[in-house]
Length: 332
Figure 1: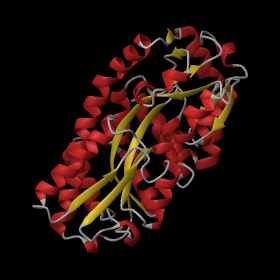
Figure 2 (figure 1 turned 120 degrees about the vertical axis):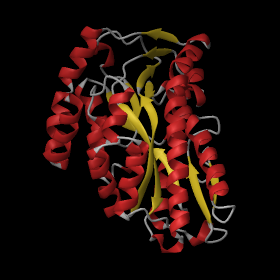
Figure 3 (figure 1 turned 90 degrees about the vertical axis):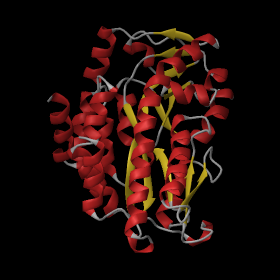
Figure 4 (figure 1 turned 120 degrees about the horizontal axis):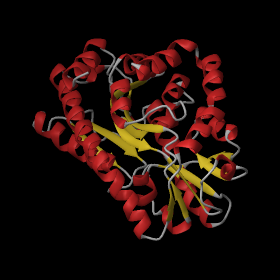
């Protein structure tokens, strides 16, 4: 699906409402976005592009104010702030919305994607439309989906070479039940924890390990408190930019279009940049001293088989329609 088609889909849906939360809004023409990604992460830089493009398109009549790097609190707090209208929007790992919109867990089927291109085709198609509607029902508007990337396990106990190596490891995950159930199925001891607590927990030995894309492991400097790095790629993860779903009546038609077009530009840039930076981040982690162990195809097949029960459970939890739609599009 082209960018133009995605834009048309969101515009025609008439659901792209930006809540202008009074507590943190300087005026009705200033949209405030909070995020937990560091300033140098590609998503934060993409939001800066959105900020510049929006001001340019509207001649400064509509602006965006950005608060990256947990300035307004952790990921869970940012979601709550958008939900209540305290801020206009956030760019967030999609799992932080899965407790509010359980259908988002359909994107977290374990070992499901072979490439980022498959993931983008999925989110830019019918599955993305379905999820946009579910978000809207809960008071959120999806403005765009960026790449967070394939997630990989790190730990301080041992290299990950077999499924047995996961046994008993206390691994931090995002608050996503599908993620947590997957790690239980492969023998680990998963712990849900906000990202702002992870470094300290690893440093103190409260956790054995964690899992994140290479870029997050690098920008969060988790290599300082982790020794072993794998390429497990167990989930592909998205960053979703969501706004509070208040009506578009506070914005003119031209401003609404400016928001969408500016965000589409930022998302396209971020996707390309994230792909380029992914492998570079892995090499950086190795250069800093992490011990990298690739996972064999045989081990990956064992992990996929062990976690198949999670797919069956998810069908019961959120309904088979969206899960089967995801699987169908992946197979096509």
